[in-house]
Length: 161
Image 1 (cartoon, rainbow, N blue to C red):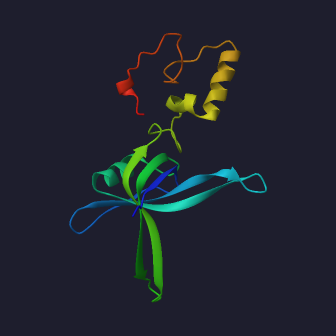
Image 2: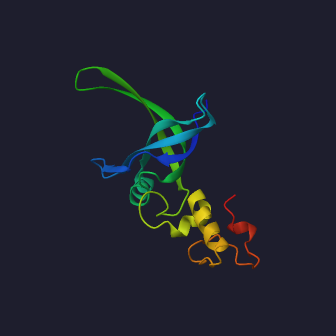
Image 3: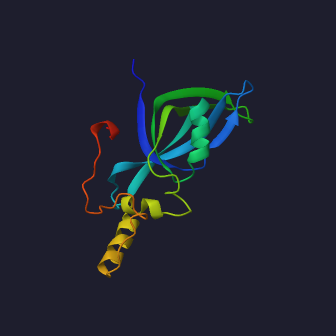
C-alpha cells in the first residue's frame, strides 16, 4: 500500500498552533496548489488542501510561515469522521505533513520588505531591470542572487538537490 502526498503551494491562512493536553504541538493550515493547466477562460485554477503538522515542525510552521508563504509539503492523506453540533456525521480528509519545507525567505510573502526577494519574483526583476536601464546601479544587498561579475564558488555538497 502507498499513501504519499507531495505538494508545493501557498498558505491560504496563517497557521493555527495548539497543544494537546499532553503538551504536543499541532498546527493546522491550508495550502493552495495551482493546477498545471488553464480552464476554458484561460484562467488558472487551484486546489485547496487542509494540512496538519505535529511537534517541533508545528512550532516552526507557526513561527515562520504565514498566509501567502510558499511551502513544500511531504506527507500522507488521512481521513477521519466526527459528529458535528447538528448531529450530522462529517468526513474530513487532511494532509498529515511529515515534512514542511520553507521555499522562500521569511519576509518574502505578504507585507514587509521584499528587498531580499527581488531577484526571485517577477515584480522584483522588473524593478531591478528598470533601475539598471536608467543608469543607476543595483545594490547587491537588495538581491542576494545578483551576479556581481565574479564566479560563484559553490560545492556540490552545498546544493539542496
